[in-house]
Length: 315
Image 1: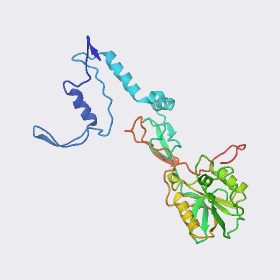
Image 2 (image 1 turned 30 degrees about the vertical axis):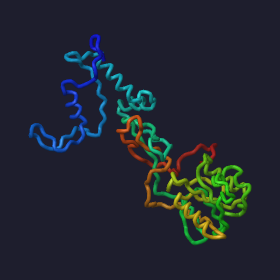
Image 3 (image 1 turned 30 degrees about the horizontal axis):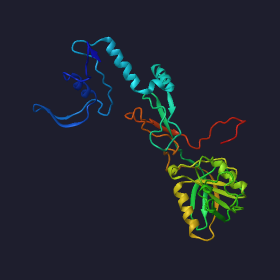
Image 4 (image 1 turned 90 degrees about the horizontal axis):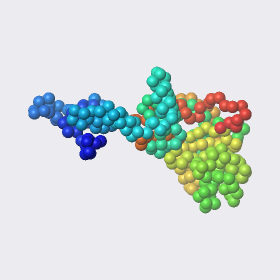
């Protein structure tokens, strides 16, 4: 701001701006008093709020052009004006319409959130208490629950040889990408594959099937934790957690002839661990507005039975 030929610094000169700002959003201050009076804890009305403060008055002069310029600057400083969804959602909010948006599917890392404007209802994805259970049963008797939509009724409960996909010494083979199992004997065996590598989960099962494998156990990456998917696999399979995958690896390394099978147990209602946030659900805070807690709520978003186009491939 300029006044005459000089530059006026944006500093509170008489204390009124500081006083009103702290009234609105001042933090907790213990043992506050005024000359020994009004003793106690001082706090503003919204102590965790963020204020955007711009100086528009110089002495008695509070020009309209300065006030409008400050408002324009405040809007530009928070980049919601560049977000078409935020703009559309604001118009809906003005009409009394609740505008609900997905938080996004870029989790589990922090600051991956989309749709963070405060007037949007931002929804993360959670599990529900229904599971379509496929249990990996190891040769030592341990059973580890996973999920799969494909539930073959005729898959034998007898134990089959169990192999880890990277037994050839190539770490990339663990991902069961196309052609990765051509040098490994997996015929009529249960194959342990790892999630990730940009390879679709069902495609990993296709590679196991192409190589002659009887079944697949798909284990999570560490970042995905306990969040598993019930997929329409192309062969008998189960998707298990990262912790379960580590137990299977340890079992394979503990014996010269590891074995496993998959027990398909169908739909089970009443999972006590639900709801929990899916690993893929985007997390806050959003860097553009870290003071706004997002997402606002979570809702069912994992293994949901819903409509699908009749000409499309199920997923």
